Each structure stands twice: as structure tokens, then as C-alpha cells.
Length: 302
Image 1 (tube, rainbow, N blue to C red):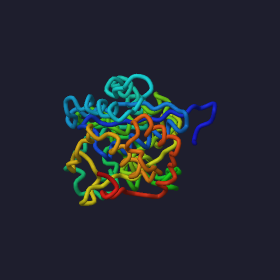
Image 2 (image 1 turned 30 degrees about the horizontal axis):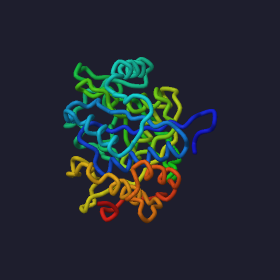
Image 3 (image 1 turned 90 degrees about the vertical axis):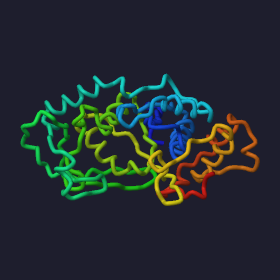
Image 4 (image 1 turned 180 degrees about the horizontal axis):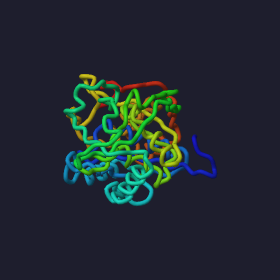
């Protein structure tokens, strides 16, 4: 584990309220939960509700009801990311004041012809020297020194942000705080020691480490698990029509999640109580069973 007796393990599950839990989000919840519980650590639930245009009314309740139905037990109250808006705004202002970030008036149309990388358009630095418009986003300055880290499942990672990503947005033109800034600051404020999440966010991690360095905050350990895919090879999500996890067959679905995560199960485990399934899963949790895996095919789950 990445922690010691002097640094207790704190993990988290941080869904966006765009719909109920589906099987892919259940896998992230199960993996992060078992990683925390097997380390005798804390597990925090944070609702990342900072993008109102994408959110569905009542989705946070559906998510929390789903977690409760599946026997998850989180530590402390549920945290709502939107409650920290003033904190996020102050951090952004500090980055601008320190010369680490700047206003940018470029629109998506302006960037439609630029080179693209794994994270989308590679920003060419158009507004680094200033812009006249008051309708602006805020971008953080990047450099081209490699940002490197070791992912516990995916191994050594490296990215040169300036040439592979470019300066990225930390506050949108509509005034909303961008995910990258909010998640980095909130993880630091909540003392998260290890982040377990889907491999679809692996390429975002160098951006997060860059912000951590600028803000002089610790870099947690990272674990990027394989993502569940549908029959067309698409990541399970609301956009690809992923169904909500069922509440009438919790034990069957929970065991299916363990099997999808390459965990050991035993005959008759589905017949046990949810509490006993969690006890078995915690005692037998082996993160390394997922070593190097990128995806989970549909035949691994219901």
C-alpha cells in the first residue's frame, strides 16, 4: 500500500450526478472501496456536481440509494463538490496572480483546425501574451518537461504537456470551474492518499500532477482500473446507453462485479448476505489481478 502507519489510507469514489450507477461505475466503486477497506482505511463519497448542464435532477439521490442498496459504507458525510465553489475560485485567482494561468478568448471554432492529441485539441498558446475579450476561459500554463508517474496497474507513464496537450482550461468561459482544477484541489483538501478510477482518466493524470506541483500539494498514488465496455467496444456510460444497476438482484450483481475485476469467488457466494460477500471480497482482494488490463469485455458481467 502507498501509505504508512503515520499516513492513514484515505480513498474516495467521486461520481458525477448525470444518472444512476451503471455497471461500469459500480466497478470503480467496488475497486476503490475494497482497496480502502483492505488497508483498514477510510472511503469517502464525493458528488462531483460542478457541471449543471450535464447533470440530471435527482441523480445524486439515485447514486447514493444505489450505493446503500449494494452495502457500501462510507466515512463521514457525503461531500458535494459545488459547495467548494469559493475555494476553487480563490485557487484559480491565485494561479493567475502568480503568473501560472491566464485568460483565453479562443472558442472551439478557433481551435477546430489545430493538432489533436489523446486529450483533444492541443492548445497552441494563442492567448499566452494576452487577449482583448472579456468573455474568457482561464488556462494554466504548461511546460514540455516530461511529467512522469508510476500507475500501480498500468506501469510507468509520461507526458509532455505543452506539446501533447497544451495549456488546458481550469475555468470555463461560462464561469464554471473545470474538472481538472476541482478534482485536484478537493483531493488535497480531503487528504486523499490514493485515487482508484477508470483507465479512461489515465491521460488526465499528468495534468493533475502538473496542478499539484504548481499548488505545492502532495501527489497521491494512482490506480487506473480497466473500464467495462459494451458489445460495440464502447465504454459503458450514460452516453452509450448503459443501464442502471439492478436493485432486485444485488448479490448476483455484486459477485459479477468481483468476477469482472478478476477477483477470486467461491461456490455459493451469491447465496450469502451482502455483508458476508463484502467480508469475503475484502479478505481476498487482490488488486494485482488487474495488472496491465485495459478493458473488461461484456461477457464478464450480466
